[in-house]
Image 1 (cartoon, helix red, strand yellow):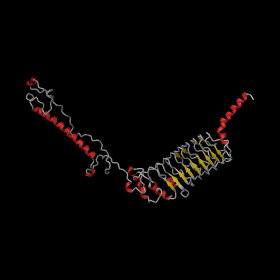
Image 2: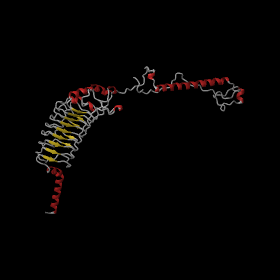
Image 3: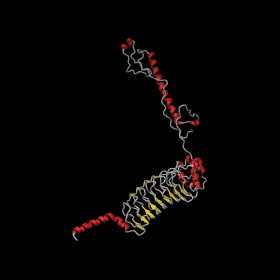
Amino acid sequence: MSNKVKRMLAVLLLVILTETGPTTACSSSCSSSDCECNKRGLSSVPQNLPSTITWLHLWNNVITTLNQSDFSRYSSLTYLDLSSNQISVINSGTFFNLSRLTGLYINNNQLTSLQVDMFLGLDNLEYLYLDNNNIRSIEAGTFSGTPQLRDLSLLYNIISTISAETFVTLTRIEWLVLSHNYINTFPIEVLANLNSSVLWQVDLSYNQMETLPPTAYDILASIRTVDISIHNNPWQCDCRMLPFKQRMRGFSKIERQIRCVGPINLVGQSLSYSVHDADLTCEETTTSPSPGSTVDTSPDGFSLPNFLSGFLGVTVGIIITSAVFLVIWCSKKKGKTSPALDTRDTAGCHDNKEHELEPDDVERGSDPVHEPVPYSFDPGYRPARPPLPPITGASP
């Protein structure tokens, strides 16, 4: 065999290995029912695997997009693990022919939303794990194609709101995990639409809920057999929590989970055991009196800021008035004193050096002392008073 032919064969072999290397290695680890394709650097779903497989492991690869044709050859799949990839797009119809699939793992990926056509065809899916994505929104009807779903996990996402219709089609759901999200309102309607006869656990811990409306107690009482976790939320034990507190009876498991994160004087206290109704208050803010309103002048209504402000105004008024009277008095004193006989400063009103009399002035009988410029004083003037600060703790 010539060297030229050998080189051509080597290049051809290199091309084949480059194109099919990971896939070939994956297919070599398959049995008739199971393929282990983990950690192979795959960027797409391999298409040369046995069509009879029922278990397919594709975790820890670099797949970014799932397309409609990716699983068309593998209609016998009952278990599919796509976790720890980089999946951000699942196109419509991707799982359409996987009617036998019961377990689907898409956790640790980069999904940002769940669309209504994303899971169509998964008629027998029972377990769906979507943990640790970037899911922000869930369209109503997203799970209409998964009527047999029993376990749904959405923990470690960035979900803040859930519509009442989100899980309404999941009539067989038993385990719903929504912990470690950003849910800020207790999902009363969501719980009301779940089938409590089969539901046994809902996890809402580690979210951003601050208060519980009184209607939440009715829902919780109606599904008392369901294990609901709401611990480690930033519960604010103030007046907003009072209506719910007044409904509490001390026997519900959920009551014992509520520990105050605020206000500061109740941090760490149990709403059920340590906090009394009288503790659940909200601070009232007061504003400056509006024009025409009356101000409480009784001893109980005494305010140091008001007193100091008024005292300052009176003091400034006295100083200005005294200055005016001094100017007038100096002017009159000057008129009564002869310039030839008294060249001294009168009550400090004139400067001797500037206004010393000359002989010619005495002979003329004139007074070179300049008349003071009249002080322009508006008797109706009052110093402007700054707006009064709100009085903390004052009665409204």
